[in-house]
Length: 61
Image (tube, rainbow, N blue to C red; front, side, top):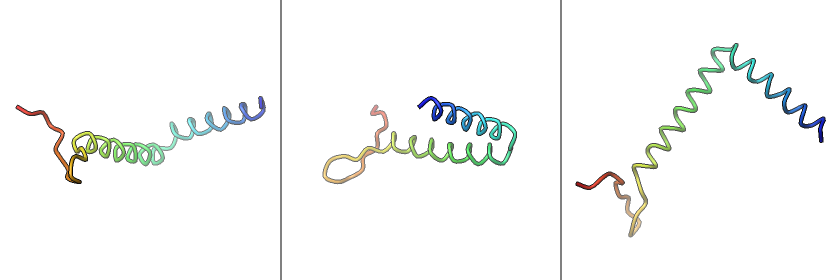
């Protein structure tokens, strides 16, 4: 198991070095992260409510 742990650490280190050095890889990953975060923000705004209808989850007032 120790060998697998060390292999995982080496792979993670190699990825981090590549991530810091490769601007295109960095941009692709950040673009995907932004898409995911937008999806989460949308989900926080929309709530699936009663009778199969969507309801806005905004503040009332």
